[in-house]
Image (cartoon, rainbow, N blue to C red):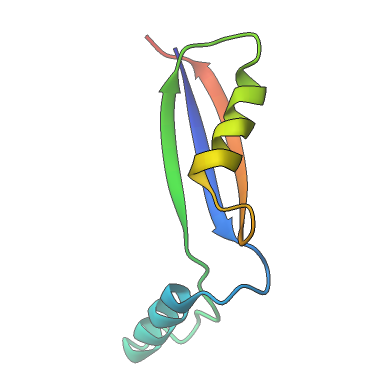
Length: 82
């Protein structure tokens, strides 16, 4: 088994109302050093290691874990876990 960490973020230019709300809230709390916030999601998978694992992870990201129209994704495939 290996751990796969998937990070999904909005593509540049896509409105991020949650990020804007967090930015405004932080400013209200006097964290004015924060210039912007971009939100996304983090997904951790534990999967069986296969020869085509990277291809399978890309497929999962494009078919389910992200919306390729408005989101970008990156992933890392970690070391084996027991």
